[in-house]
Length: 261
Image 1 (cartoon, rainbow, N blue to C red):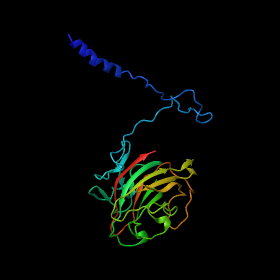
Image 2: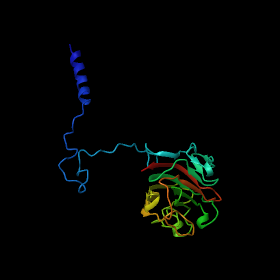
Image 3: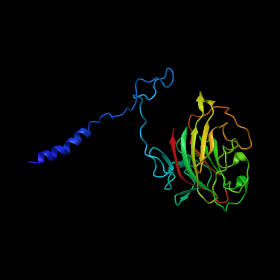
Image 4: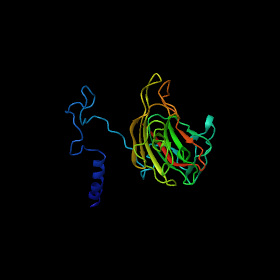
């Protein structure tokens, strides 16, 4: 005689759970003023769409669920060499060895969030720009410098964390050579009209957890010993280029992922 009662008790919560109820507290309003005069959305607008969820990585450096993983230590399938040839860089122990000429991504990107970890070798010969030199070129033209800057003097706009040839880092935030360094970079592509730049690119660079570029305007494509500008026509998107500066002992990269913005 108790079976029907037990069955009903178990089933009832299931039926109720399948029909979401409004929470007993306000989740928005419809009687507030517009955020901006004449704008579409009101302050705390109940009808404003909420963003979807993205699962973060298990640790700070792991790729989130919506990232494009450019190198995870197992293959170089998303990279290519010059003129579309196969990527010439070898990898071992999950680390990409920067040797064999520059490489590019097969895909093109514009505004994005990039995560990359890099390491220089303490046994690398040379000084200044000839010690652990490499670089990340956003859109194949705007370089964030990689360099051994621990006890190694060089010009300010060539230090690790600099927009090469343009803007020095706010501080020297590198660890010792032989230790892994971490870049988390927000790059905003230039605004174009008919291929002409009407607003410059900007970059925010975090090196080892320290802000070294804060929404810095990029003055134009990276050049060596020359001034730059946005003269000419520019693409809306382009591949990343990772530079091989031919150190005596190659730099190493790992855990490279990107989120288009």
